Image (cartoon, rainbow, N blue to C red; front, side, top):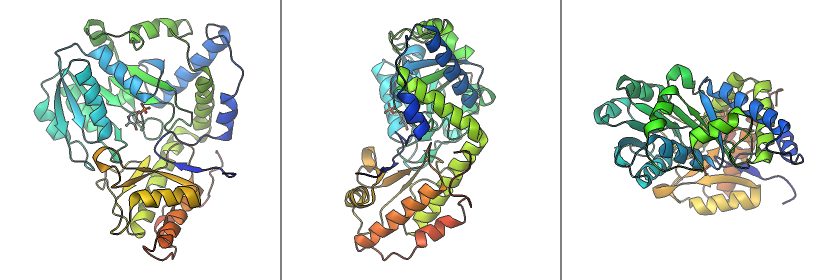
Length: 383
Ligand SMILES: *Cc1c(COP(=O)(O)O)cnc(C)c1O
């Protein structure tokens, strides 16, 4: 392919040119002063986006490593924990807790629906509550603040998978009172995969001090000790730190509230366009994710063939379903370095491909359905 692919999966997300260049800088000593300055800037920038004064620990790993660190540092074998499971990532968090010997109480919601705070009230016997903020597999954003309020009222500890949400939608860790929040570089942060970050509250530190699960690479206390002196216990992904530094600078130039507003606008435009084309949206209204939009195929449309055609003829790569929805739905990612003009291109290609497959003729209804949501400028000046 001589032109750039339109990468519209919910992570890894597309990289701005500035970030690509930053990731190509020469190597430095990871125990030297340049890395200490880089680490400090990255940690401070990520904390501003988390809106927290809590400690932030950084791991060279995918997002799941950050999630595993939450389990390894908070749980003792035999502990009862609550896992909110409403999709594939909730399932993963619960699998990790079980692998570390926790007795898992599952609070389930149907796929496409949010986890209900009132239901959480009913099962809250246990210590740590694992919550997925944005359930990327079902394209549902859970009502995090209401869920965490229940957790706090019962004096429990919340551990939140914010991998796909933080940086693209507000989390406000300190105001909401999230004990542990996890995110990862390849989602809304406009950086490649390879770094996970975890914020840890006072209460979470106390619990980590007595939790007995084995931990080594993902030991929060050890990581914090090294970070205090400007380094990390193990060799960090220095190139990704440079990329993240540049991504954070771009987010601050745009203004974080503008970043959130752009994601919401792109989600509404994508949803409006897909509905106008006749696709039933998968997520319950009112809980639709700002970073990814999922829909079911209309009768007669084979999702795998549709995605293949979009990739091969239009250079547009969208996500498929996960877990039990594999082959049964598609998901359009619009997180990070994505703007209004990109949504126009997505919807245009998706409607053209429906004509190619003899599902429905192209008449521009997808774009018409999106138009009222889109900004009048295809590219906001700050990008
Ligand atoms: C992407 C994602 C993850 C992390 O996946 P990795 O492949 O380990 O980076 C975890 N949770 C959610 C909700 C995600 O979207």
